[in-house]
Length: 277
Ligand SMILES: C[S@@+](CC[C@H](N)C(=O)[O-])C[C@H]1O[C@@H](n2cnc3c(N)ncnc32)[C@H](O)[C@@H]1O
Image (tube, rainbow, N blue to C red; front, side, top):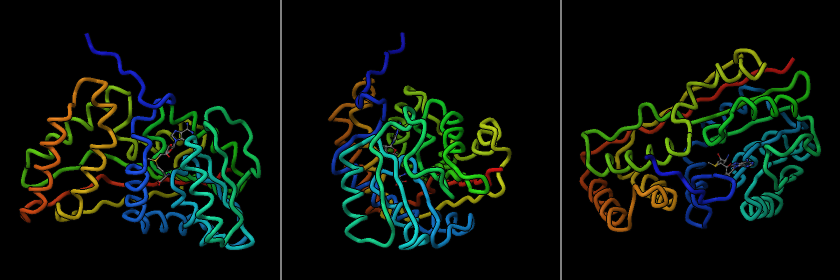
């Protein structure tokens, strides 16, 4: 019988919540910054507007929002991890550039959001972690002004690969897919956005954008090792990882990165957006 997954985090989040994982989220945010900036620009985020980032993590998207709404604008984040949210808010306020608020809460338990409704309600890499992404999009719609925009940007893991095939990547995929599937997480969140927008009553998106990268493995290896480490506790609880295997993975991935022959096709980051009637 399949072993029942216990929860590493009480809210069911499958990644670690520690300083290494927080740094990985910041590194990941830097990697995808341009793709998110393009979405914020295409949806017309302008000076003086209000923007909400749902599942705001280290606050990297809030910073990009602030760059666009400016000092007369407002940027609010919702983040269930109070420690991460508090750090993000302190950093954002220290740097300034807009009015910032952070709501430390489980978005699923929020009805109204202080400061709402917003000109833009956005989430990045959040729906892929949700059991019911349509319910989250319904909330995001309710938190958006008429004439405002709901936008989401999610990974699609359908094409992620290392070429030529390498054993370390096979181990990465085994653990990554094992944890995601055991916890009912979605590996195809990106491509499913249009159908989810429609199911949430938003209608089909006004626009979509997709970006992937094809990089020498040396430029992706530390991210892949970081993801593996961040999922290790969840994987160990499921009985699909142990410290010996993890150590072997880490050294094999580092070795492959040094080799120079290997290239990595990243997940595709897919965005969709819709103006709210
Ligand atoms: C993969 S991270 C992405 C962070 C950020 N959006 C970014 O792209 O840099 C997902 C974030 O959503 C937060 N989160 C997960 N479930 C949540 C919930 N139910 N309510 C609020 N935040 C949640 C996690 O704590 C985490 O910080």
